[in-house]
Image 1 (cartoon, each protein chain N blue to C red):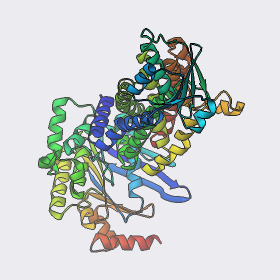
Image 2 (tube, one colour):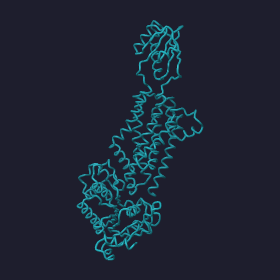
Image 3 (cartoon, chains in turn brown, purple):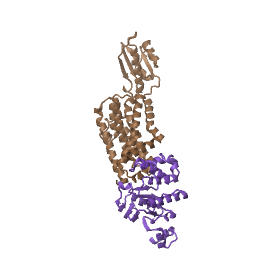
Image 4 (cartoon, helix red, strand yellow):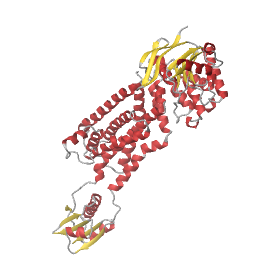
Length: 342
Length: 241
């Protein structure tokens, strides 16, 4: 079986190339971890101002590492002037928390601290009220950026690395002369393409599983919906990246030229991936988003991971991804044609 | 005698540059046919067209009476490219067995053929090494072994002995002659080394995309009144101008 022979060869070649494997499997994890820490940075000590808060609550908060500064009287202005992360006031049996919210991550952590402390003291002598009126000095946010961002990032990394490695894989075959040499054997172009999709698809599958598993179990990224749907979306996206990478490698003469496609093809996709809101954009810009594969993947990933939607919601997006892959594969067959008329 | 290769009126140009013009070649089965000419004369394009990986602008090309390109036909052709097209991450044996598995062969036969091809080019002991560790001459030998591995009727070898030491070159030629004499293979070889041309049954002199003269080395020397092929080449070239 010729396809199998090529698939086996591709897998063998990649397994002997530890640097490329590391790029494929570990680079996304490193970058995701870095982003996780940047967006969830809570290493700084939280500073909370208090007014009329008893020693019990203060004690619990300080035990949990919050730096508490009591004030006689304070308000929004105090938070800004004293550079507090927040200000907790108890008056007339109600708790009021004013959060600076310069960094959403700090606000979230502080708010969680106050809530847990209040919960612990709900039955204790103080009988703290559980209702907290939370106000924000800057903006208003109840989620960390990373929660929204991670589905998009996972999709993006799968796309980026699969695109690069599959493109360079076929390019190497072209520049080393082995592609032409293969054309002197009785192999069909369809078989060659199928083998490439399968061989690199195998690594794309591995990468997707590793990235998704790592995100969920190590980085604690929330997946409200089904993990299988997350894998399905990423696999469809990987197939698009594979076929696009192979297609564009036809137009590159060297590895460096392949890398030059990144700012042209990959970077613009970031902007349309949903990191920045698309609905507010001009009509024509929204139209551009519709021809970006990552747009559909990001929509679907956000729906599953963040909003916990089911298959009904994402099936259109997944179908769109498969259409992209089908188009690129067809184009590949047409472009490969120029090498041999068979 | 049946014809292995037949080219009629074949022309090819890349952009404005004419690479080959009006090539007519007929090669009988069981011959060693040499295409002799300086680099850039169009030899490589010529043999690529025979294999079907380059397309002629005009003219007709047939191998064993079948029009090129044809997938079934490629099973009978062993091609060795001028540049070594090898997978350097893989070992010599893995390269051989990968290319062998692209042809219809039973596993047992494939194993035998791999051993045979490696033995012919004297690479049996180096098969376990990765190709990235091979010398230039070893790579040439492996390329030749790959061209032989599926037992093709027609061998098309583009400068096969470049980078080989004289001893190995001699043994390769001995093997090529054996293939011709014992197995009736047809061998087409391009070279710019004149003493290799002397060993061919029929030689075509190629220059600037044209065939200047064709014949056995002895015939050519007689016709042009020359003592060696080098002189034939010079005289044929002047006569043409």
